[in-house]
Image (cartoon, rainbow, N blue to C red; front, top):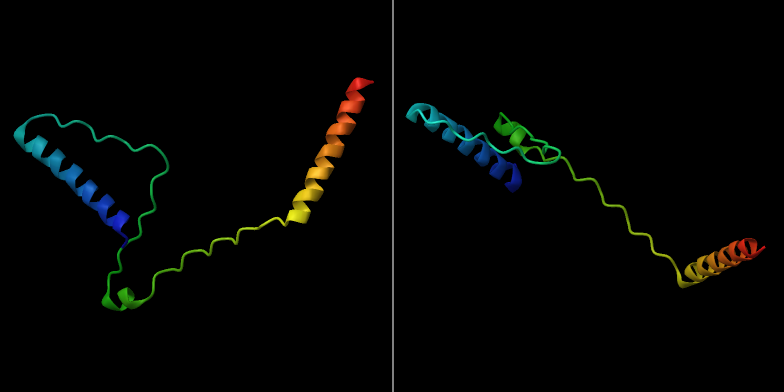
Length: 93
């Protein structure tokens, strides 16, 4: 269980305890604020010791950043300049 999952679990428990306290004391507890965005995926803790020894799922490998060579950059810049010149010539007609 990751740190963020543990913190989320503790926050949920705190909210439940605050609601229970409000019910017992007779006061109305403020509704818990909903978080904006997509809820995080919660992974259940393993139920047996044997399952705990199994390695967690590997994180997907990040894609390697693709770099453009200076020659490639120059070719693209030249092509863009030719395209702009053609558009400018067409607009001037």
